[in-house]
Amino acid sequence: MHPILLELGPLTIYSYGVFLASAYLLGLWMAVRRANAAGLDGNRVLDLGIWVIIAALVGAKALLFIVDFQYFTSSWDNFMTLVRSGGVFYGGLIAAVVVCIYQLRKHRLPLWVSGDLFAPGIALGYMVGRLGCLLAGCCYGRPTEVAWAITFTDPAAALNVGTPLNVALHPTQLYEAAAGLVILVTLLATEGRGRQFAGRTFWQFVLIYSVLRFGIEYFRGDPRGDVFAMLSTSQFISLVLFPLSLVMLWYLGRPSAGAPPASQAPARPRKPRFS
Image (tube, rainbow, N blue to C red):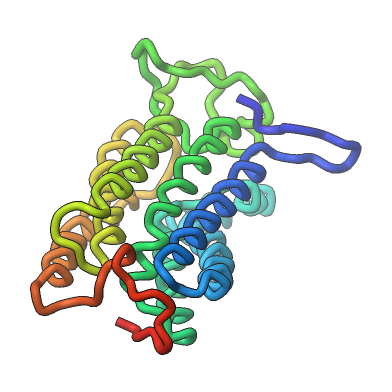
């Protein structure tokens, strides 16, 4: 674990910030490449991606602030830890989707085709970002005796995000990075198979992520808020998104529904339709 990568006088470079920036850039790079290959305007997708990144950053921290409101409002020092925290992925995802829909309408880009283009990039960025969590010590797991447990020892992690030190914990950051890899490989491997329709890749991402995230939450040990004193905030959102993704896959996959998927989008359409 290395929460601090480099210190140059008053300048401190944190590992999480470096990996988070890398995650967003890699995800955006993949989305632009996929957009160009599908015949959409890569520059417009790049502009859209920048807005999505901003929304994701704000949304992730906003949901973290909401679910742990008492902690962040108890003192100024606790509030400032919000700046160093990555936030809740679901908050970033929801905010990014809202902003994305607005920008797609504004630029008249096809909704579900664009979602399909972005989904693998989101999975890639998620995987890289969780490796940043591992280095920073955030999003840590419950105490455990499993053979693959990890132990954090750097005081900077305890100071920044409250990581328990010298305690064997579930490596939940690696579980989630592995989940991102599984989603990425699954999406790319199945994209050209079976019945094709716009929105399939995006809602497959939501479906698989909601299942994996729900399970991984049982191994998390950091405070994340709870709903009905039974589920974590992310588990509750997963329970909402899982059936929604099934409904959307059915709805968009009907023979009469939807535009062609990203892999079959017409080359350089003159007036792309918002669908």
